[in-house]
Length: 164
Image (cartoon, rainbow, N blue to C red):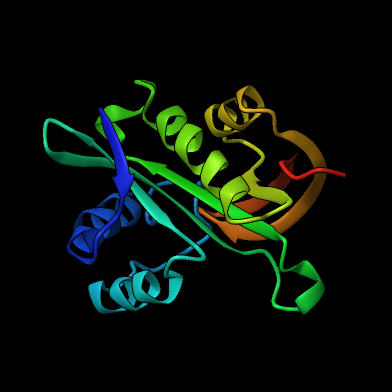
């Protein structure tokens, strides 16, 4: 597996991985598929300050990770939110860990202090992945989203990566 910075031409693979989960999973709270045009705009808005990375296996994108601003107010500028998505057939094979193992040091290089992960409370694999990389649960929000016919809980996990 190879983890590298994503390129604009990876947008379709990134979008395919993400959109697979939209109608069938609570790992995203999106309820409608994201268009490729919207994904390309999203990618271009990320830029160097908010990298997007992909994991390739045999030349195919099998997962991606990104960081985004946690909040828009200036005082939050040292905290980012991560996202990690793995192609369905590659789950449990180390793709998510490989992505986080590259993204965390990148966040440190960019001068961020804290990474926040917003994860559906029923997504045990994602919670375990983040815990294995030093994230700790800091909040549990109950019934904050409605998807797949039921209320969804969200957990916030956080890892401090900067000096105190």
